[in-house]
Image (cartoon, rainbow, N blue to C red; front, side):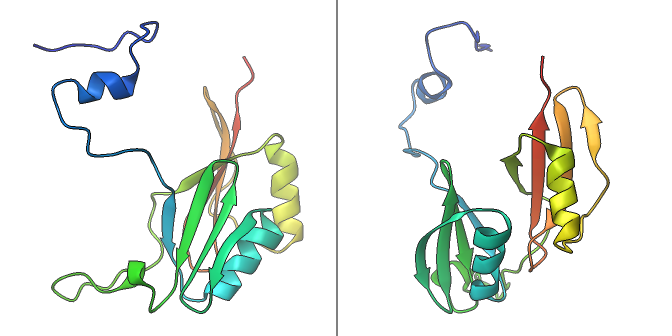
Length: 150
C-alpha cells in the first residue's frame, strides 16, 4: 500500500516513518567534517563564521555549533577519521554540504571577499532563495543560503 504524507495531518513524519518498524534513530546529532588541521578549522568556523566552541581536544577533535547545528571537526588521529575496512582513508571535500542560513547574502559575500575567502561559485537565485558556496580551509563545502521572502 503506497501512502502519502499529508502535510496538514497531525501525524508527524517521524511517526509515519516508524509505523510498523522499530525506531533505530533517536534524533539527529550533527555533521562531521574531516579536516587536516583542527586548530585552523576552529579559527575559521569561530572567527570567520561566528560558530561557538563547544569542545576542543587538539590536535584530533573539536566541536563547534551555531543554533541547533553541531559541527564535529575530525582531524588526523580522531576516532571519526580512522581508516575504514579495506584501508580506505576518510578525507575532506566533496559536494555534500552544510547549509547555513544568512539574512543578507549579498552582504555576507562582501564580508567573505573582504576577508580573502575564496568562493566556489557566483551567487545563484532560485524559487527557494539565493545561495553561494565556499570551502572551509580543508575543502569541505559550505552553502550560505538566504531564503526567498514570500
